[in-house]
Length: 552
Image 1 (tube, rainbow, N blue to C red):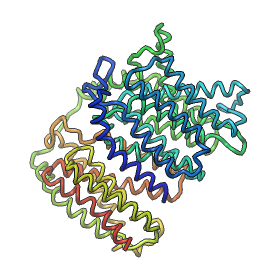
Image 2: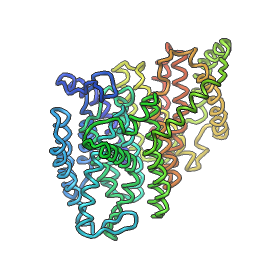
Image 3: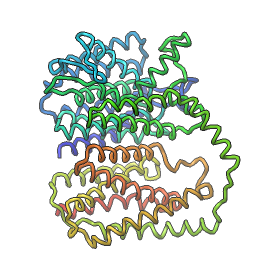
Image 4: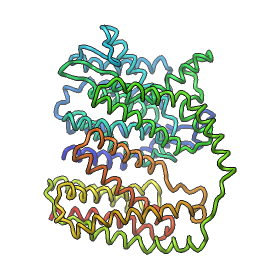
């Protein structure tokens, strides 16, 4: 229960805090100004990562009992936080930043030194003191690599969300209380921050956020990779997990050295810069990078389960994809130009579009009614504290939506996804425990989801085909937040394959079901925007009523 509470508190506190932080940063001129180097074209507040740090660390220190055992981790985090704040406000020379980063990295090494006798990389054991030197270089390098990769809206936020999700499951499997609480706090805070940081962003992480996330990812992956029985730290696993920023940064450094320029001289050779140069859309670039991240996670998870060095092969292939992304995109770009010239596009008849509008309007409320009738949970043996926490979270989020009157804002729509996720989580717990008698018309319920999914897919395809006649060309149907949700669902299914367990099985199924209905909701509000508020606020009713019925 404590982990669910930490997650929800972190989520809500972040959502509450970020709007006030944005106003504070704007008043104090802590802003990222557009320039030739910058990709964005609007003045945007930076240093948003301070919210993620404050919320996550506050909750960790509030709930973790043995604070003395992690005092050095706390000291190191304060050092890196101070470095980021000064850099975001006044700017720091790289030599000064390195001093801060080395000090923070040493705090991690000293913290784990009592559990550490040996460091291994790809099966090779490193002698003392070379092992500690390489460990220090690795830590400082990763903090900088993640900092340098922070060039697009939502990129590092989504990247860190993937990493901490994997870390949470691995730490849950190991029953590591410190790491479970830490990752739960960061997942909640990152999800809340994604609302404001996904493309188009209202606030940036800043160096404060990217370095803090890099620091705590290193702490977490060191904890996962260190065997306290054999006292061996296998650095291969963190390398696999963090391969994307590592490989991308090494490639950029080598290019700069070959050109005779300083390795700290800014250029446009990072992976996201190259992709944008081929007119690939911002959110598509972030989505592609997150897919590559997941691919490296698959390699890392396979290595975690088997310790097989054969994982070097897919690791090398993915690394080469990053290194040679420019020539690969050149070939694909030419193919796309040819395809556009020979494509014959047939537009949907206007009458079919009119039918589509009417059908979606009438079917949506019928869909939700049947959904509630067939899958409403009557009772389940589950700790009432969990239900109460979820109900309070639902009421808090509903209160925020009513107070802000922001149901029309695109970033607020994720509440609908959250509501459906809670509802289907209750539904899937019942199904997983084989208590089908507790569902109304359970047999029909199972068939309903199959038919609903098929029908929805057809409607969605028709909508996407006809969208140019229904919505403006510049309207973003799938925003950066939506693509992050897709990536998050994908990582849960990958964890389901490699790790398994009821927690992942139930959660992955619930998120997939929720996303299906979330997309339906997005189609509905595009076609009938005047009635969107009823579905938005109505989405809070399903989980709330289910939770109340199960409590009483």
